[in-house]
Length: 216
Length: 222
Image (tube, rainbow over all chains, first blue to last red):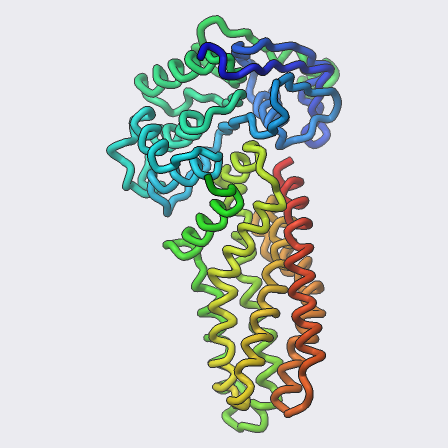
């Protein structure tokens, strides 16, 4: 199966406002199936807000988002924010199984076990969430992407807190996902991904607010 | 393949009873408050019989308010709500699953100890069935109305006061009818009408609460 997903994205004149500040405006772009969009920009440039808008969590101030996909199913996105959605009192295995089952995976026990192997937490399966390091928490969050196939991955700094092995794992996961025709949109600092499209958030920062920032 | 709402319900139930879930706190509060009443008012049976039903219902309302602050806030703070929301799940279903799991974890135990506390406050022993029905419908109403306040205040740090301010006025109908049913049964009058109205409050809360709470959750994420 070369292409399990067929999804493209078209943004038309998107704008976001946080409080009274316009983060970005006039953002238009189109993404083909299998592409990777890397969001670049300073802290506070609106990368996370952009991801939340695409995740359907935040409403854009203006503009249109078109997901061009074959099916009408609205369960097509994974969102990995900078919070890992880890419950301190539940074990790693319980949390993975909950997400598998919640995301509609058929055999949640089996798929959780396999996913924990992929992310390298198989020998930590009985540890409660409070006993995990930042990198291990991130790895546990990544099991969601591994377990439930979804066409769009929205990742907020997916490599943060991960060691070298973990970063290679994420790069491989993303490569596989793109091969299957999935879309990846990731906010990034530091070294980027192979043949990614770069979106510099700074280009869409309204000029006026940049001036006010300097004065302030 | 289980329904996501059912999956979420069972997880919430497990989390509520596991360490740090805090399902036992309201039960402890309720038992403690009702036990202290005779110590504060004095052991005179007449006085306890007069004050008991009211106190029993007020403390039930306040105990139901206790788990509300963390009901949605914990999920908002650790990012669970983001992941649930982005997965395409329905917010009303999420609010329904979470609220009913918490009712089962702490509201049901609250209702079950109400008859014991009733007898302790010199209520007639024959009426425990009515007390149980009152406490069940009262706690259902309190939890599902409280969930609206909890969802509205989820994004506010230390939002407990805000929950109390938004939910307590809405507790009034259930409190009025529940307490009057308790007084009626303790004085041997007909309690049917008041009990029915209290149950109606519970049904309205269960039917409408999740929609309001779900809409408020969506706003909290924005």
